[in-house]
Length: 127
Length: 198
Image 1 (cartoon, each protein chain N blue to C red):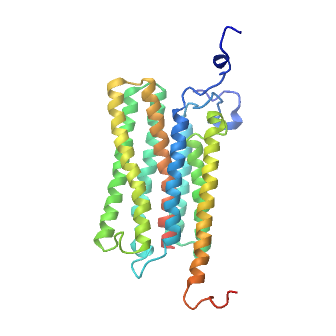
Image 2: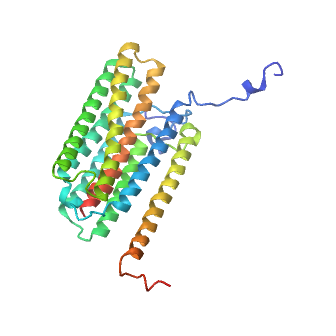
Image 3: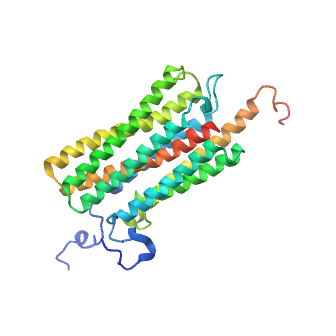
């Protein structure tokens, strides 16, 4: 396929032909190289312990993973806001919202429960 | 105008088929299953019950190797899709087989890891941490297993019928499934393995 179609600002996957634009070798390679970089960095950071604080390092790891998920979505799964008339994106966003609620909510609730159920900890201090 | 029924005329734009959208919605529901297992691991991942911890058990070089296998299988699947779009049947089948071999390598390494863990007494029954670990990682491994079964089936379909529209659709569905599994694996290696050894 040619790279000379009109809207080059959207990259090579921006065709609005109602669903599934042809994939390109360049797109897959860009996605692959970005993924390799975004995989090597977190493994290296953990093995090398360049950041000693586990909390900070964990946060950095999650951010890098989030970026790599987006890279995969764009370059491998060819997600665009216009694919299938926007329905795939809508389903993805809906799922992401549920996922965040379930994940963050559970961690939040269970964390506080663990703290409050700890023997000899805080039970009397709670009013 | 009045001779033509309205319901035919009105349907101006319509995806060529709804299968890919439907399959995407299936993947999203699958993602919710994984989300539940991630939640269980998030809650129970530090409940060692006096048993071994993640930093004692996890072999990061092995996990890195596993990650590489899955990532390589993703790009080779991409090549299979490209060959299919160029109408090259042999290339499509060839890259699909390469993808399947990388998938098998991934599974082999994962089974080796599981066998090793169980051998040293860190099986799923040891602690809540290991139960949730085996459930989450094992579910992903099962998905990869069925992905390979699907892939082998598809190779035979392609050999028999060639690049007919139905097979093209199937290749695209498996493509979504395969890349989706790689996306889930990003969450697994980050959240379970890397953060588990911190």
